[in-house]
Length: 254
Image 1 (cartoon, one colour):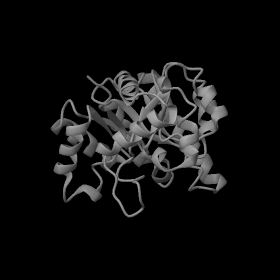
Image 2 (image 1 turned 60 degrees about the vertical axis):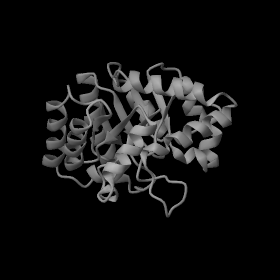
Image 3 (image 1 turned 90 degrees about the horizontal axis):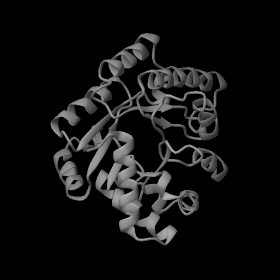
Image 4 (image 1 turned 90 degrees about the vertical axis):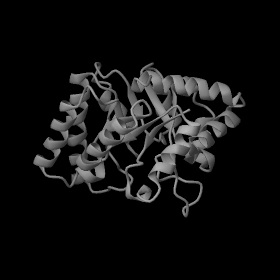
């Protein structure tokens, strides 16, 4: 099993990060640590170096954060990504968040910043890990114009089944399902109808735990795998094998 999206560099783990990583190692083959800003990207590279062969870094700029950044800050993140292109598994998380952001001007700014990261992913041929909450269809329509991105990942997919079917027309596009599938009817409905050939699994730790009081962690990805198997009435071993192989292919995990 692989957690393809987590944030174990966040302060929520400062007191017991070693134990969290140890539990993940006891359960999983690997985790993808997703950067959200310049500092987090540096942290992702650091932890990937310390846990070589288990933690794989993805460098990005979260849309809600990047919309308030200066041009210089954005360029610093992009320069850092390009400088480390041989050491990363993906660019992300980047994208558009239309759930939290309703202002039209800020949405347009998010889109412009997103496009600048897409162009890097396309030019450098690096997988693109997208945060496109309430903007899945718009993101899909944008990335269809970029044919040199090796893989596209819809992180924590929550779009429509209609958009999911369009995504599945492309063998190099994947939808990631988080631990939300354990309790969200919307995610359960999607996960029951989308073939595992187009699935990845994640936790988005420390978020999306079973209850609001809990802190999520990568080892809990096993709960998502189990629930997907239950929803599709197939063996958990099959879900594990297929989603793990998908992740290894997308993120170049050995």
